[in-house]
Length: 343
Length: 230
Image: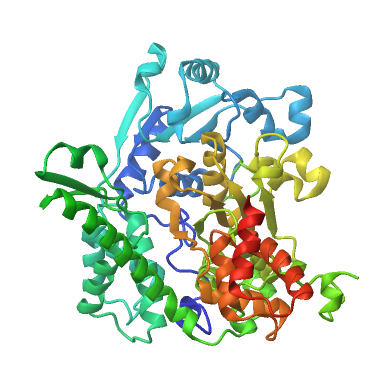
């Protein structure tokens, strides 16, 4: 590896970065959702958006910031940052900086975007509602996974408008990838579709898989990823790494009878799939076999490590990255959220 | 006269810094993960070289005020990622909550991360204050990572202890080619329970014995170390 794969392809930074909306403000596939939320904001509603991991909730908020920001009217706050409870007052005071905190000046008609709203409890909601009624807050957007609706204050509920997340589909996922890498010959459309089918409707997982795949392909010197290469890639991914102490002898089961069915359940921690194997063996053989398996696995590991060991050790081998460290570090992706929370 | 002076060394060669032997692949992964902006978890037993890898990373990328290295074992109170980031810009940054961008966070020897810290890490990672994170731990399972963090982690690497061949390399690197036979060193490594740190400690005993008796055999080493363990 003389250089990092994406630099070889002409990208400066990792094009498959999983940080939300790193590269652009356009959100693909959520036009309808964004429209609905915008409508809610304009009508002074409280908008509730729920979605699963990696579906693009934060990206939507980023888009909203872009739409409504500019007049210092929007507050973005991620609720997982709060220490104990949501402090709406300091958030509002902060609009006028240090002076605002000193003299307790609060702006009117603010739009509050709350990320990770599942952390809020009924007290937070009460406080939010009182500020909402007094007119300091014009509209609230709550985004999160599994928001506690039971904790909502009754008065709050009357203003609520729920918006569901749109489902991603293959075409949209393809657009997401295209937007990031353009028309790259390395990664044909059909491969992207295949990857998406395997990533469980989760765009983040898809991006991660794309990254791994491209890295592997570039390192092995391929110009284009073929179907076979993809198949091989997924196969490698599914076979678990050999561990030395995988199977521990199950003493109580062996003791009972000489001949017995033993169900060994092998749980693949990565996939969390359960495979059942029925093995019929004699008591003595069980122990022998297990000893053998452990030994074999040991050998396997040794073999794998042996490859690295057989070559002559050169102390400077590990300095494989080109370019000075400063160069590698300084150039970076766009900044997502500015230093301030106010837009 | 110290034992190493007898062998023509000015300083104790065993206390010299160890080179990263046998973990070049993992080092590559660590460098890549920093450049591409990802989260990496390195799992390994004590003495398998976790801290070594982080030190190499600091060597490579340090010097620009970008790296925050935290050893969880040395912390007085609970870890607070937010505070660490805020302190980067000095007292003013801490007062006005100005967070630096593009930081690299190295968390060494973490046993457990509280949910609050996980969420903080997630927030700062998402908002690009943290460019990349490397966490080392004894056991990945015991970290109790939440699902949304797990999805952000690119890879979970396991460190293996050195093979016997590599242990010999480590020894030769420090003490030169002419002291002790390979087989003797291998025996010493086996008797140290394949733990590199323990191995280096034992090496000192072996070397002292070697100074006293230049024809040290494998059996002698075995006896010496077994007595030492008791």
